[in-house]
Length: 161
Image (cartoon, rainbow, N blue to C red; front, top):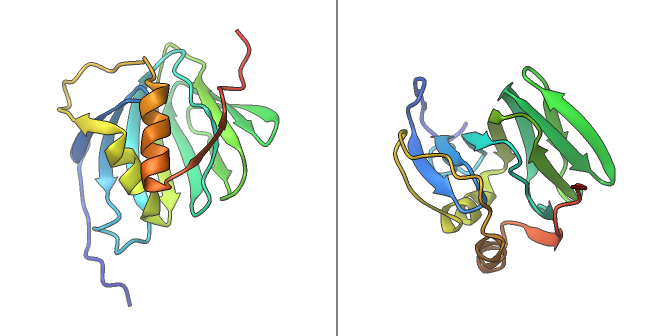
């Protein structure tokens, strides 16, 4: 039996955070709320936003694309994932993504929720009205990753111009 309580949030509800890696996250269910089982957040991003090539040692990561399109690089292979599509990357597999459309809205699930410390260290409190910033502060992403162990950076974004 889980020690976690029920979590119910409507559209737009949840803790909003401006991510230094570009995007506006809304935490829909935190690790604390789920008893550590998972972290679930919605991410609004603008076109061209990229992540560095990285790996999660402890978490499986799933992206469900609500709007827009992502180009997802998984272990050397690129996949286009549009609205209604998903990609699950098991822990230990190098990956990165790029927003291939003008904007995207993605639901991200990390199991277990141990990477939440990374996302908090790499973001600032925000509101639903905070503009979505596509500029990535790679130095802060690296510092947050090293500080929390939430991920290991493997290299720059693997996408061509």
